[in-house]
Length: 234
Image 1 (cartoon, one colour):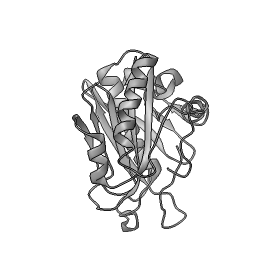
Image 2: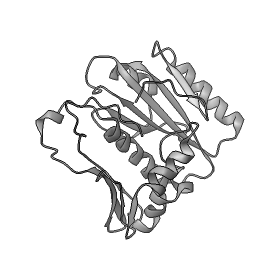
Image 3: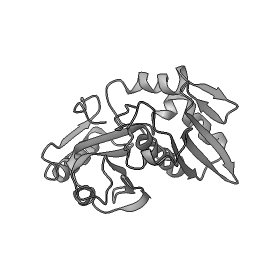
């Protein structure tokens, strides 16, 4: 995960992001620690995702008691049982009430917010087959982003992002560096997660999204597989 937040000082912005998942901790833990499971929800497809997953989730952190994944900077992923459900938190400890962070965009915080939505979708819907993603990027307003994504069953809403399941059953997570309510164009992305599609079916999904996304943004890009993502995004 790259950090492209606009920090007011050299200090990292603290964050606390969590989601409630209809699955027991015993099902969630492998999804946070075993690369073959992490691969089915984390990030999006690009050349280098496999070694990045191993570095982030296996080689760098400490695994504590089937409950926490802890990194050297003090940040951690935590599972808390909640009856038949559990809560998964991504946390970087710090003073969240500090006013200097009020208007700060932080790519790591927003990344975890999106990735936990993808984790919840995987564990609750149990899709079969290989995960393949589309990653759309461009500069749009919040209104343009919503219009380009279209309709679906909403599953997540935050200041800078939203998610839905589209009419074809694919999870769509849309994020912007600007608050969605602001009337200004900003760098945005859309991650479309598909499962179990063959090459022809996936190509049809890509064409459908490309025809929708390219008119929305003057610098629109659509990438999948090992295609390089445009530089300088997040």
